[in-house]
View 1 (cartoon, rainbow, N blue to C red):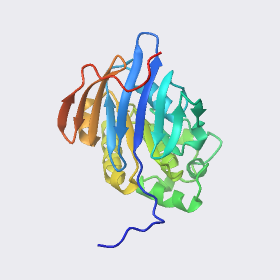
View 2 (view 1 turned 60 degrees about the vertical axis):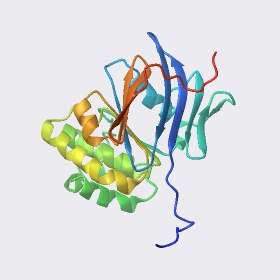
View 3 (view 1 turned 135 degrees about the vertical axis):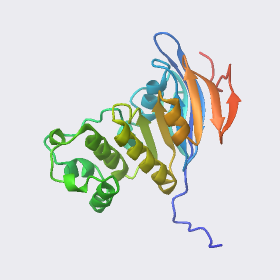
View 4 (view 1 turned 90 degrees about the vertical axis):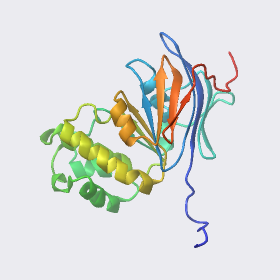
Length: 239
């Protein structure tokens, strides 16, 4: 066995322990997402899934709690610490990702990327290298979503956040992108948090599956073993 290279970045774990008051209920979540694995968040519309993604991304702030990636504390309401979104080194893919209409596909993917040489190979992997000089409004929705994945990964993120990225796609494109994500997740060796309303999709992709209802985790499947959590309460100090 070769000794570990001390210069090689070590995989990080995402830890979430937060509370957030919403209109109808309180999002109250304690969750751990490991590097090299995809954690699928499932639940009905309005359950708090997208709010959870926004909190992790730093787009919204919790009322109480902490969010950290490895040793990096991104959010801590007790100390007032809140790292802005652009400093969290995350890749984001939403249901419809807004690409810049005045830039080519290649320019969109390379925007903000630390190394331009990664753009071509990523486009090749996602089957859109032939679209490099096209504008977003001249390609299909599935092609735009492939470009969105490329853009997210070109930034060399330490965490990948996916919020219903396949829900607007046709079956063939959806299956293709799911297959690519399955192939890539171990090589990326970062935590992937994937929100979906589709349990079959979650079962296909997820190493861990978390069911959310009214802001609470009600059930977890970890390594295909179900763990019921009917009244879980994170260790966040009460109001």
